[in-house]
Length: 300
Image (cartoon, rainbow, N blue to C red; front, side, top):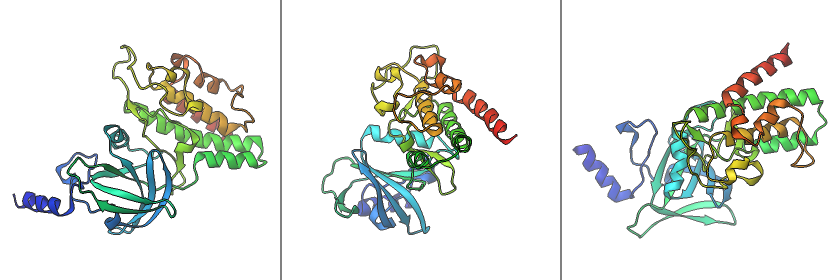
């Protein structure tokens, strides 16, 4: 009772700002102060229609995190729900999130953040997602750099295979949780401070049906990035194999310098990943096994 009274008092003092962790325990909810109070050294990493992403130091633990701030909608919780189900070395780590009724004010000239307490009694407006801070360079940057270099073909392929293995391992985990990413592309694949590949940006992630024998769920059509969409993704009936199609394109870009988005290689496994029919595309688990075999051939 005393704890509840304390929490109620704190609510009235600071507003509706709560910490939510995916562990589901009662101790995983506690009061959080404003982003501007708990964090400093804030630097904008990215901004767009999705919101803003900041690198920020949490003062209490003296550690840097990525904090994504988006306008609160039911769909905005999709990313949190998806990340909360996943723990894997090759997926951006999710720590917690909170909803705040303070409206962020953006200084577009300096990309700085401030907050002002909303005078409205309506529902909270902004979702804050605290995640692992990755390197600012993405897989897209890695590919662009390799395309500018004059590397031996075998060296590039060996490096690319190492990265592709990590991506496939992450996708396998995502699919094992009955989740479809729907927006796999080099710009959404990052590198952690430990150097490992990290799949991020689950803003378009969606759940997959539990029964493979039932009709594919109706989904939002054309969700994702057009140049990485599987053919069936332009309609409303599709499943996890859309991620395999995108993965095939990514692996193709890793291996070869492309002068055109329409070029295709002779590698059979990549061609199978790019099959027009989703049922002809391999599962992530099959790809993982194949890539392990390829790695062995490079090292023996």
